[in-house]
Length: 250
Length: 110
Image 1: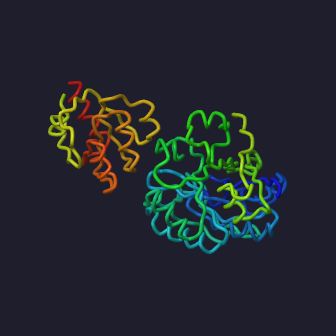
Image 2: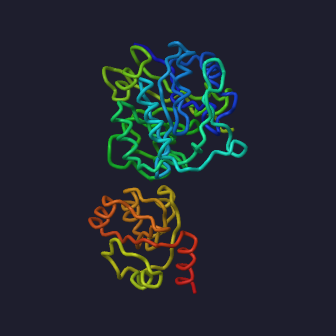
């Protein structure tokens, strides 16, 4: 076993707030430069570009499928999957439930599915920057029913973070959480002692190419894979995760 | 002012009302529970769009006089059940946060 460097929260051009430069190709390029072993591309309520990132990466780095889902409470969680199908099926389900608000690319940015050749496959019409009308509990249930992993995103953030919005962990299992790129682990635990004993991730939450590699998580694993990561979250067999250093403000 | 008088004056729908004689002297409007935990003061009547179960615990912890879900928002049965167990007052206002808060403010600070 050894330490691997991972970043489970990277946006692409499918997120309206993600830079147009964040095509699957460019993401793989930057991730390789940054020396990351395992990544996930989690767009707002969508995960389709992960498919193309995988095609390009060909296992180097390993790419998990994922989404950053915004629940009815306006809590954001990362939903991660080993396989494409459950992620894409859940994306379709969530898309159908999203309110009928059309994205205005001039105001919010484009929401593009882009393939391995940098060609536009399609553009999603509904604004992805809306909460889905499902409670946190319901979203967690749907992700887990499909074999996915749940990691509440930037839990400290207001708005959007589980602890920021809900004040403390609601009933249920929360073995893994992500903290913001800028928050030190020490500061996080001082503010929320209940973080102790959980697997704490840090991610880049990159929306621009140059943000990839700015923050990461280290995981002690046999190999960079979904199943190894799942075991590491539970601290099985010496596997574990630890957040990389906090990003300096500004 | 007694909470039951406020409820009557604002025409609130009662969901759970175990403590009608609590005194209300002020209000607080927020959808962020971390913000309410940090800044709301005991006795305040809390207006929110947030209907997560944690609302009950936050209201109890901060010793708020009650929670008004604005714009006709109704929480789930789990929230009502928890509020009954914890003795937390819950109401619904059909009008939105701005108008509910405005009327409450006029009532408390005429």
